[in-house]
Image (cartoon, rainbow, N blue to C red; front, side):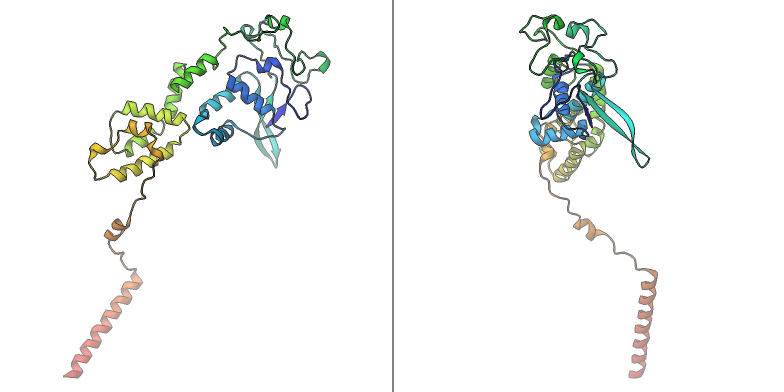
Length: 308
């Protein structure tokens, strides 16, 4: 991953205030942007890489994989993250991600967010000469004339509700585990339910499918692998086979109680193997056995004749 800064830095990160306060993006997207900018040039990472590192560090408290992917999508949408196909040698091409601390491709902060005229960017393009840059030095703030706010106050008013993916929407996501957009909800739910059919087939009790789907989606958004839940449901079905069905958990309760993390005994295939018929001998073995039987019968006849 290539890291692009608007001015040279060493041993510390210097990010334009307008970038950090770009309220078009969620706080998570801005945090990931700062994390990426702090890395050295050619650092390799994807949204899934950062999600896995977060899960390894924070466990269940970590945001889900979809939230990391949504943050990367925000960075792409607003020009901070670009992708290009480049020749990497030996005739092979690869997708190279480039992160910048200012929007690329002509994107700009919305007028409602920055107080600037629509179409003007509050952050200079990368490579602007330092003498003409509008990016303040570290620790300073944008002058009041640039933000239309009084000096000493935050550049983002407390009453301001930013665009998609910000404060209220993030709170709603945390409470319900769902996006506030109905269209986005439908797409995410359809994707999360892709493997639910396999779970429903192997689970031993088919009841309250709607509740089970809700718990399934919640588990997926907590980062649980669908294959893990399907395999655990199959093992649970083997465990309760032949037992009183009233003691079998409802599928929604099984998912909500995270029973897919339980330890189930491995299946015992020995009785089935003992019940299998003996394999038929090969033609060569059959001929050898027939010859042996013939010689045994002939020897018995000769012994019987000699005794007479």
